[in-house]
Amino acid sequence: MNSDVSTEGLQARLELTQQELLFASLDELKPSLTIKPHKLLPDRYANRDFFLADLFDCKLKDDGASMEAPIFTLATKPDLSTWTWQSKDGAKSVEVYPSVKGRATQFDKDVLIFVISQLREGMNIKRTDAENRTVRFVVYDYLVSTNKPTGGNQYERLEYALDRLAGTRIKTNIKTGNELQKRNFGIIENWSIVEKSPDNDRMIGVEVTLSKWLYNAVEAREIVTIHRDYFRLRKPLERRFYELARKHCGHQSSWKIGLGLLREKCGSHSHLRAFRAQIVAIVRSNTLPEYLTVFDHDNDQVVFYNREPVKMLGSALHKPGAS
Image (cartoon, rainbow, N blue to C red; front, side):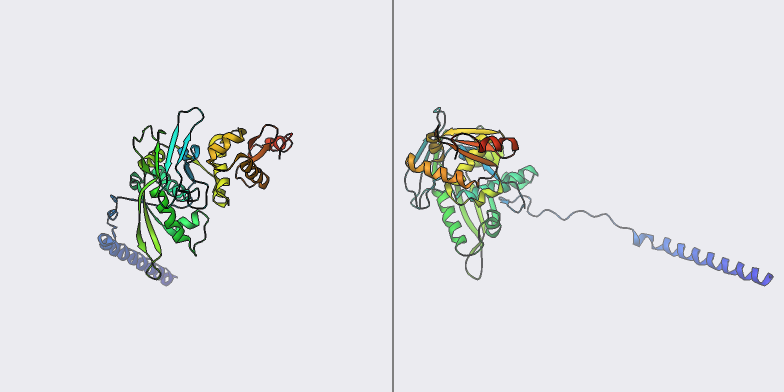
């Protein structure tokens, strides 16, 4: 019995000694185990002279000024005509002068929507590079974001679009950011290819410098959020039709406009009869994002209904004289 007790006592003392040795060794190691504080690596490109468009799932933004005034041609062939527009009250006017490659088109505007959407999001999250009017982006990202194929002649078509955007000159009394541009200017000041594919000379990276007029609008939040399905609309007139709905109807339950004034706001060259047929076709297709449209034959006008208020759908569909 005593033998068992002494054995247990020795084992207990042995375990205690082992623990003391362990803690002693840990104390000796403490200096080497201490995690030294460290700083972040330096931001080597904090002061770059361009905004890098590398943000995903940004809300799409359209500038309010060009949603109001028909700056972009609806033509799909080179439009070499000078275009002038004045608001109904005569307070706003725009003169648009094409280059030898033609006036910038409604499809060319996709570039601007992509760029200003990225830029505004950069401003929202307070990125310092968003202070630059020059925006650099990867062409593949642009094509995907605007619902375009990523092969074929899309890269060449983008190059033509950039040429038209830079070549089209504007003179207007429409202020952006409470500033009037007392000169004519390009929709974009310039653009350049910053990276090409080594295999086929296809452009990979592009830089675009926005006009001060357009940048001011983005900075002053004179922009409107648009639906992603805008890029699924097939025809230039459909896209322009949606822009006007988004600009003027917005979140209201409804908005109506006479056909003649609608033709002016769309910037259409078509005769009124042909334009009426085009609008009726769009109304019947019912593909416009966010809005249900009705053609009122009795009053020769279009009525836009916001799709959100469900109660408006029934009244729109049962409206007398509606298509």
